[in-house]
Length: 220
Ligand code: DX5
Ligand code: ZN
Image (cartoon, rainbow, N blue to C red; front, side):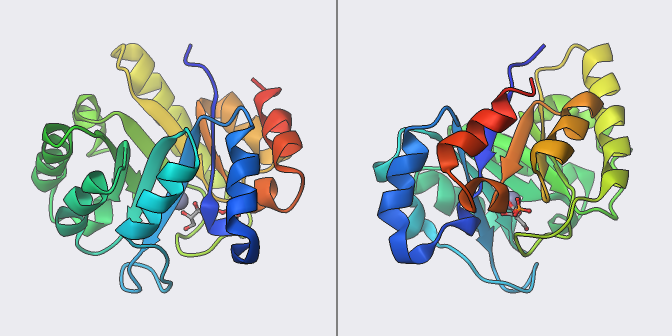
């Protein structure tokens, strides 16, 4: 069984006191920083560019988990790897075919990063399952991507269960990450369904960061 990883989403930082909050985050047992890139096109919101990633990476000692919600992932993946991404997760809806999806995973690997694939709540995963061995992470969106603070879509746990049984049956080394509406209650459901990596934005940053991370880790 994979150990539980917590990936606080810096989309929910208080931008008036970023350095203070990054310092707090760095003292927790959260291993990954979840960094949401939005292009105002794939999703109706805009966030961070590569220079912000470079700065955040300097401020913490964490795995930089970069979730690119962009229409042109082929263009942006190398840019964020150059800026310090350890993992780049792109959206299946943003590539034309499973063939392109696999090709982009291979490009990401060739540039020295880990590759993740994500799906919106309405996107089925069946045609991706046979190619899971090409990926390091599969990210299930449990809200419509674009904004923090939305409520958890429990029906997305069906996909998590399907992934868990496929990964276990084929003995693959792929993490199942979930993103959107995670709190102590929904985290428990997600872990029971088979997730081993939890993104949490508002839950972590709207209270004491250390306590929030501990409250998720103790569910494992
Ligand atoms: C939403 C982003 C999430 C977001 C989650 O599109 O991908 O990472 O930060 O925020 P919460 O945990 O508040 O739902
Ligand atoms: Zn995200």
